[in-house]
Length: 536
Image (spheres, rainbow, N blue to C red):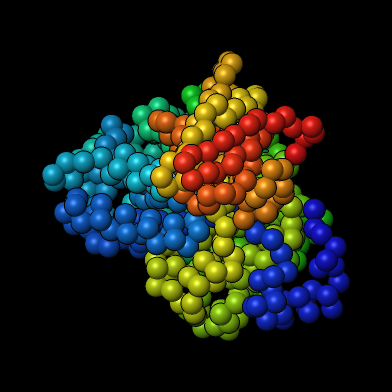
């Protein structure tokens, strides 16, 4: 729901014109917020920097990207592992990507599994890893001779190719109308979810291809052969995509219910000129009418766990105002999460819209996001602009927007119960500070199994404000082997109160542990456990 602090044009205008120093103090940074970045591999946009690099260099570059993103406050990455009918991991159904090794179908030498490595690299930095796939793009050009023999466009017999693929412009695409294509794509997702410990499966905005001059989709015969009761080819195309989204969703949840499935559609669903009742006050391409993708249907049916519309326009841009679209999407989440796609690539890099020359455009956009309860975070496109630091965006992220570490927002529909409540069972003093150990009992199912913990410390002998980030000592690593933490900042002679919360894979929060009051002495630590008298 939109909070009243920004209602009214005069109030809104005054708000967005505040200096950065005032704006930075006008809201609290959320304790739970997705802060992600897309890492694009097609044409080596973000990673690797060039095709065919030695694996050691590939790993070094990826680690470097994650280190910078972590320093900027990011807690999730969305890495493109299937850019164009290929794969950045060993797959029985798709060849190795040329953007990785320089030649499609060629494995890394010396061999390693990039996906396995990237997941571990992200987890070691407490960042979620979401596998980003482009489902329908089969090639990035018309050079079929360079495709690997295992690519379906070469491997299938000619009569199958005409069913599986179509040419549009300068690329080949998998045919969304084909049930065999749909099952092929679902099987790719099934294989990924089974073999890898992913946090999410992610699709971008490419469904049916973006329209090109003098080009027409050649699927009229398919429609005529099996219209499935649809009166128009446009509705039939949308149903083709709907069937894939539904199938992918059900497949993921049947294997690992905690794995998120989300889509990042084009930022305009429909314009009001096309749909006066439900459309937005914008002028431009639309996901529904031009790409035949209908994310509102996916949200309504619970097929996706989040939507991340690409709102790649500035505040006040007349054809597609960021504020207008933010407000529009925030009212249509249907109980799922809304993340906003932020155009980091446009910062000081857009000739049409001069607002992108302002150093605080992204800051004001994220500040607006946080005035909507429905908005649960942001994803930036893409990593490389953040690394280049145009107009000091790194300083904005680190010192204004993301000054506190944030956990991922909870998705209650992905878990049947919260995690078991932790209890602090042992405390002892050390030369450096205070060591805590805890446990969790009576774990009956996987949802009750803690995935990580938040450790709070309050000065004195009572529990304080959990919403104040200064009271949060740390989040523990994901899947920590030992449930132990050493507080090296505890000063001798002082009293502290410690409380621990557990979180599961869906980021649901447990009840708080009983608080423990600790007196740090020069020789050790004395402690006693207390009971909560209320719910915090």
